[in-house]
Structures are given as structure tokens and as C-alpha cells.
Image (cartoon, rainbow over all chains, first blue to last red; front, top):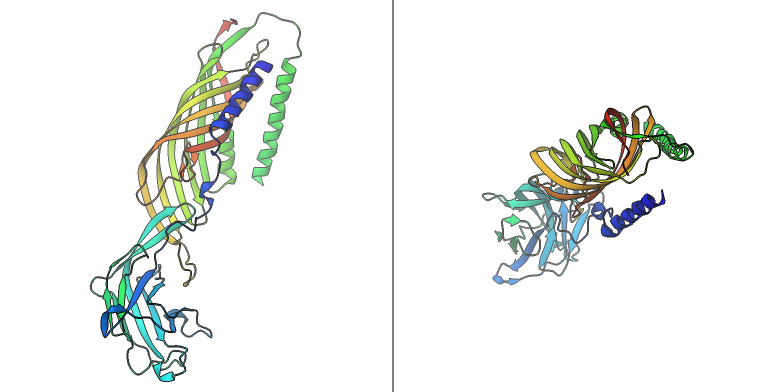
Length: 186
Length: 237
């Protein structure tokens, strides 16, 4: 009886020793370092000096879904020439209100333009814990629209004219967010 | 509820094994005894029970072994399984069939004409299966637009195969005339598997759950089988 118990135990110990990580659940957590759905990267340039990057001041970006909320959920950027904003993964377009100088004492400088970004989506598998991520590809023929907003929302003054002068596509494929995808000149 | 009933019944059977073994050591007289040779066929009772109480699980496995010497048995399992896994970010169904072939060695010295086994063995396993991705969630870097409801997919990946090796450790005890109850632990190591495009094998029928970046697995099995005797041999030392 003792002989087989001994060999039984030896085998069990061997297995535990040889396969120490057999039962470690490595896939329970989606690591923060894992690449997920990329953001849209926009760089701003001076319309009068197109090689020079130009900082935006008090740029308030609000998704058009939220513009009629009491306190619209917004992304704020100040004194930067590069911004990164998310695209919708459940639709083929994202509409934002780009409100420049939202906090400026000079009310005349406050100006909102509406920007619509259009794309196709590709869902890519990441892992069990993370699920999927989405890669976007800007529409070749009609990747974006920018226009004046309606003059009926006091939270988003339309301003005298469009503050955005031009948008250029640098990269139609949005599958990373280290490098710029579009340049906006103003 | 069903799960608790089954666990309790399992505990009762486990106690019966131990009792059986203890009783076996008490008899003193030594008449001439012979080893029975034959084929044992049975089924995995845990899989059947789980198919009843778990609505995401359906499986049937047949087990068998064939004695080739005093201590060695050719062993095989064959089964089919359909399981739906509802994870946080993925919901998928894996269904397929598998076969495992190998050898068991009885480490236990039976007294008189007892035919119990405490065994160690190995298996080579092979499975053909298919996967269906039912739904998934997208992981956003920035949660500005909030969490969306899961996307419905329905993508099917057919004709997948996998191969693996197993080490088995277990017990089989004759509860009453030719009827054996057994349980075993298995430690599995995946050798190869064909992967679906834009997805992964997260569960393989016959192998079990696959952890990311890991080729090891384990399982616990519970069997009830019937021994069909063919001939007897005198006990040889």
C-alpha cells in the first residue's frame, strides 16, 4: 500500500513542479498596455503659414449627441497643436462640435464649427479578456464635412464665419494613434 | 441546485471507495484467485449531469478500457460536446467531437479477487470542432461615448482541429458486481491547433478551456462503467 502511495505522491509533486503555471489565469485582465481601439489624431497648422503648427486655445469638443444636455460632456484642449479624440464604434460616422475660444472674454472670438468624420470599420480580435478593437478607414470620397452650426444653441455660438479653413487627410487608415491622421488649418 | 445534489452524491461515492479499500484489507484467508480479463465500457457521469443542470452545456462521453496484462490496460475515451461560454467581452459556442487513446497502469496491489485500480496513464487526444462567435464587445481606449451593447456577430469557424497529450491519475473501484465507479484528474498539454481567422480557440472540446498564451489544461472526470469479463488468468507475481 505504501509503495504505490509513495509513487503516486511523487508523480503529483513532479507534475506540480513541472507545470507551475498550468492553472494561472493570465487572461483574466485586459492589460492597459495592450493596444485597443485607436483615437483620431488631429494636428493643427497655421492657415497663413502652412508648415507651422499652431496651438488651439480653449478648444471645447463635444459629441453632437450631448449638445443639448444641461452640462454637455466635452473634451477640452488648450495650448496644444495635436489632439486625440475617439470615434464611434457603433456607427460609420462621428459628429463633433468644435468650439474654439469657449472661455474667451472677447465673445466675438467664440466660434463653433461642426465636423463630421466618415469612415468604415473593421473589428479586430484582441484577446479573451479584452474582446475586440475597431480599426477605422476614412471614406475615400467623402471623409469629412465641416460646416457652421445652427444659430439656436446659446451654449455653442456659431460665430461670424467658419474658423476652420481646411482639413487635409494624411492617413486614411486609423489603426494606430501615435501619428497624425488629419491636419486642420485655421 | 442540481449542482449541489450532484456534489453531495459524489461525496457519498468517494466515501464508498475509501470504505471499499479499507474492507478489502481485513480478510485473512488466502484462497487461489485469478485476474479477470475483459473489456470495460462506461460513460462520464459528470458530463451527463452537467448537461441537465447547465443550459449552456451538452456533452456525452464514452469511456473504455481493455486489460492487456496484469497491470496494464489499453484505454480510450470518445465524446462529443457543445458548450456556450458567456464571458464579459465575448460570447461563443464551441461544438465538436474528440477521441483519446492511451494506456493505463494500475499502481494498486489488489488482494484476493478484488479488481480495483489506482492508476496512472497517458492519452493522445484529437478533436475536430467548430466555433461560433455569438457576440462581442469593443474595447474603447477613451470611454467618451460610453459602453455600447454587445455587437451580434454569428461568425462561424468550421473544420478546426487540435491535438494534445494527457497525463491521467485516477481511481476505479468495483462497487458491486462488475460495475465500476471511478474518478480521475487529467493534466493536458496542447500540441497543435488550427486557429480561426480574427478569433482564437478559447475552448477545445475534449481538452477544455484554453488560457491565453498557455498550452496547459486540466480536468476532473467521473465515470461509471461496466466490466464484461472475457477470460481469467491465474495471478502471476
